[in-house]
Length: 328
Image (cartoon, rainbow, N blue to C red):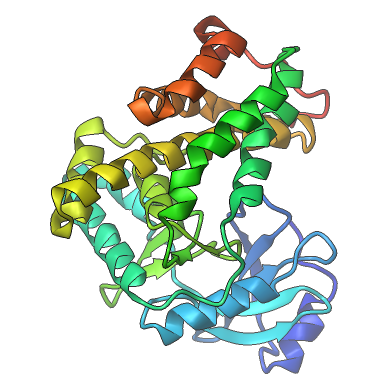
């Protein structure tokens, strides 16, 4: 992975004249990341090339989070025309790998990430677009737009959207006042910093929405198995200050948003394979179906569960996905 052509000049213009540039792990988007070292100084170079990416939302949310007292990367330099941003380097100690090596820390670290969410939800929401019905529906429709055609399924798309409108209505009513929703709050986007704080990454798609969304993103992690007992314990921990009625309503919204998110991710992972040739994302589909099926057991999701049973039966969900011709 080579740095973009404009990287050297960008770094020189911002005082990193003798910087060594090396690649670091990227994500599912067009963004790429490089570690920059100049003597004792270290930073991360984000390459978010226009028109595919716009780094300004990341910068805006990073500055909001820092201003609210959270650990988001400081912005050292930016060139929005080139899509280049020089960021604070949070190191390599991700929550995911730490827990792989130290499973005994699981309960304590998950309590910390839940504490962070509780603090974030007490802060005034960032000035962001709302997580509204149109956005929720665009996301769940990724299943019928990508997964179903890939599996050669002829499904009731109009009925699917109508059911989701019905199911999401109480969730949308319940996100007032809204909170900042980072939308990708999971173990691979949490850094364990040397000063003891939790570093936040990958929040450029943030919206104003429901407090259950980031909670379900963390506890129903698309890339890491979270034991059912741990999920229940952490959900109970988050709800410790809710009365019984409020906790019951929150759990209902949590299940609905879990089903919404997991439905969306199934569609996204198939799109990454079929459109972008990233076949490795199909490896996550069994976990995603398992999470979705667990959410569909909640009584609030009975109409959605019925639609899935009629349109994508259990046997179809476990059927291997055809590989993309461009898969690599």
